[in-house]
Length: 397
Image (cartoon, rainbow, N blue to C red; front, side, top):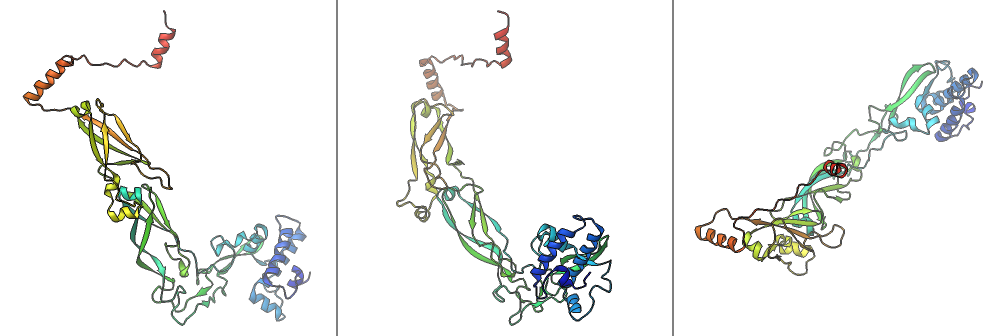
């Protein structure tokens, strides 16, 4: 068997790292003991693995190129090999995730996208219905203006990590029945970056970003509801190393209104009337939701003229307590355009609890006129259960 690692892998002497790895993966798939348990094939697999270890290790390759026998001196039956490369051969690089948390092998990038940020904003019901513009003060990570994201002091630069030779990962040897298994882990010295910052920026301590409070303007569209999130692209946290910023999400909290309750696009309110007004009928005025808008807010909401602040409510004679009157188009606009919802008014008829002598006399006279001096009341018939109805249907006749 040749001791020339180039011949064993079948690659030219000027082959680059990708060609060497590709040749090794191809042979490893064919010769791995799990695929081909023949003893002779297992020995060949070990030779292929040792050859790849030599060509992928700069120190061993230098020793071989200088005329040394890289297969001697502990490289016999107890040959060492990279467990990560075995995983690469069978799973297409899945074994190299240690250095990048699941990505490809090699140093992990220092520049990464920042995280998204979330803040809460309380707005009034009218602002949610017709839209508004707010200024927000946010505290997030921003680009360090001293080093512009590089993390280094002015005039200095990162240097390659000497522990991992800039690879961002180091080998760890463990003995097994196949020999010495080498696994790769993120370099502890450079934390997997492959570089060190000998003179970090004093403003950001080498992170490339600092925390700062800034003011943003957020446009809240008409029709939003409690819990709606408004996205501000690239206004979140700036990433490590001055990476692109994440997004900022503004989650809305709509405060309670003293008159109206919102349910979807509809508004609900309650009007309490004396029994005389309910009996005779009456016209009352209700405030509109637009009455909460300032002139500037009304203009921003798209009203070309001052919006009405009142709306008439016609209560017909004989309206009963609990009746509901619908005022169309007095609700909340749809979030993405379209017609407004309705205003649903629930009427509560109030019975007087205190009467003077004259009022009591008049009510008694009215009761006499209506034949209601001694009313029996209206008792609703008892609703039979299903068992009762079945018994009536099939019982004796």
